[in-house]
Image 1 (cartoon, one colour):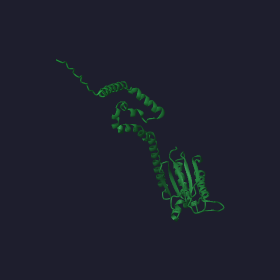
Image 2 (cartoon, one colour):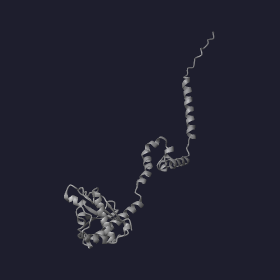
Image 3 (cartoon, rainbow, N blue to C red):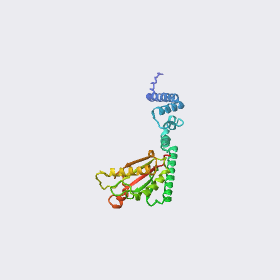
Length: 265
């Protein structure tokens, strides 16, 4: 019987798939090894960031931004908590904007001193029966109490001489000021905007300065107030308190202001 040869059957395989599968396994093992070797010392990292923050102001409140190392180790999940991190980083800047307790206490003390000074001056004005001849007020920053005297009461038009009728009021104002001889007292003269030009006063500035100086001299020479604590100056028409377009407004602008500062003993 004749012997027949069997044809060897060719084995068909997808060799590239096996190679690719092996390569993927190797890559996976490689990245696992890399990941296991990439653990960060969180304590040292936090110390580094804090040091950079103190030296170069990279972060404002760096320790709060680092937290417990969450930004280092949480990976992609940290994106879900950005609001929390930004809030922590902003705490330092918010605390810087908070009012200084010491400054607030000093401001409150200044306010209370000025309010007490105002009450004392008003009470004395009532006792001396000149409350209708003067205006007493406090400035908006609570630095001083101001006694305002009408220029028409103290002086005749275009003059810096104090008439006898005005000396009664000025005497009693001087008696009030004696109680504050240790405080800074500023005397300021003011006018309306009607121009003046004569042989004595070439401008309103000269007139207002002369009137403030005359009040200063009266308080130091007659009432014996200490000159070292008194100042006199003229402001002319530069600081009106009323409308100069009316006679009543111009009358209010013609005045002498005496400011008693409360922050001096």
